[in-house]
Length: 440
Image 1 (tube, rainbow, N blue to C red):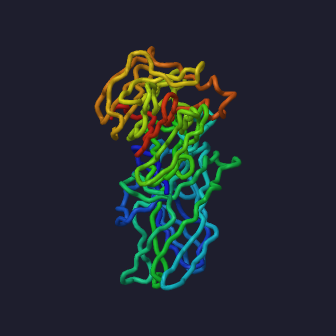
Image 2: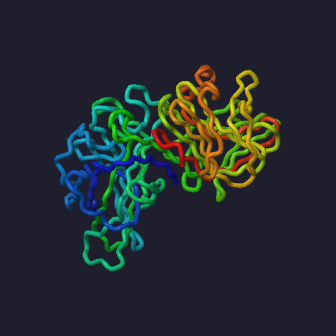
Image 3: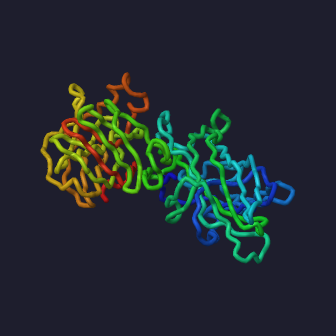
């Protein structure tokens, strides 16, 4: 039910693994998750991917063979986004295997755990020298559909994957995945193995005895460890993720002055509502220690369906170690916004606002160009820019006594506030990226 995913440009050492599942199988297996009905992956050169072939035999044991033994831990060509080589960079194990054959359908279920074999933590995009406050986790995705191994031929035999958390564009569009809400510690340390292990489920006609699937592990390394991994992004899609703090992968966390707003997901998207009478607000944030010199952007497609009054209602914000960069969206206008700590209210920044019909859907993007400027785009067009000297200082660290320590490291948030009128917004999606070109 969730969809957020991590995008990285290089697939240098993607690990492709074929696993043959047979009744009674359990033991070591392979990596990563996401499902997408597609043909079997094409052959890869030794320098392009680490390929494993796994077979679960009739005696319940699993044999894994690496087809690219050249991949080694610390290889400078490896990508932190997509990687994996069984028993070299990671190890995957299976437990709680079960097979149910009823009413003409076989159902295979099991738990799959990932064990980190690298000398540093994976699962967060925070810096290698800082303590990560937010977790991206691990995506185990399927680059192709499962294939029947036995019997062959098997007329009308299709193997389907169930209970995945959503789809993402890892190596191709619409790839299904299983998501692990874990930050894995370095090998040998407490927490070096996943604990939030979803239940994998496959179904096929009873005629199927065994099948094969390919999987790839996608998980971020701390930025700075691999020079070619330059972009980290997280997406939230309410149509598949449902609520951002409950079902999204990875999760967003809630924050606010009063934090009394309500929110729900439905056929229109994420609806956030706030009452002026109770001074409600409702924000969702992530903490990735955004550096002052890093490019970043936050984009959302949304519609204000109730936004009377003169103050900003919807806020899209980025926060680095010095500045707080916020786009305010109000009743028929937009502009840079700032938070007044004395009145605990959102206001328009100096420089004025621009008129815009905010009661219809627009795609808004606030972009940060290093430590130089911030720019606002609407529907892909640049509308206004401000130098950092005109932007507010990051006020969040001053509230460490009132919010969680994680919130003081806040790097982005979005949400609604009701100050002089009731407010309501429908959000279609949110995309947030670090080291990415702010311009659409």
